[in-house]
Length: 111
Length: 114
Image (cartoon, rainbow over all chains, first blue to last red; front, top):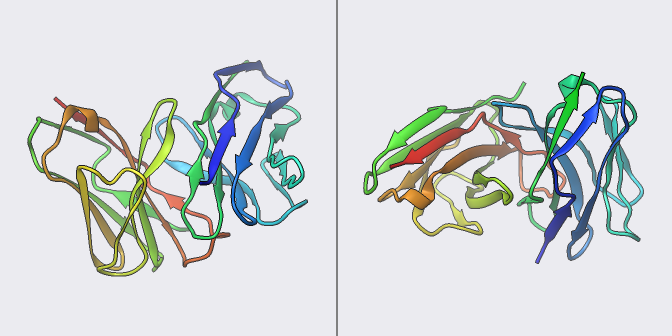
């Protein structure tokens, strides 16, 4: 079945540091890939997505590229801020519309 | 903006009680979902619905049931709450049955079963 593996946290960074969170997947067919973010005390919200190979999703300075050859969708941001402290979830949706989530990575950015 | 609301942010119940969690979306979405979120496990799908009165089991339906009498409302029912159902419960909705669709989440209900 479909599955998502993302790097374990927690990750602690200083402001303006580079952030990368690795995500790899296993799926039948050609899935859509998503990054969701959960800020403290809130529900999840979509950060970015890519629906076909080589697509790049981007939002709020974050980027991720759908790499079919390595079955990966790594999240990156060049310069993080304290406000980026959150839990980040990688997810996929394949031949139906259900989402399969990774375990989540907690990111803390210190001033 | 899409808005998904959940009836309670925090709920404390006793073992054996019947528990109702309500979710309402205001954007005429066809699909609605219930997940539970536990540390280290991510989100796991309990049930989902793609139309009024329709429901399908997700990955962990045991101990839960659902009801969708109106398009905008999707209820999760714990028939007899147990301590292992202590968790964060998240509701979500999406426009239609397409694997590229974004799911929109409510703020969550943190349920504690004593």
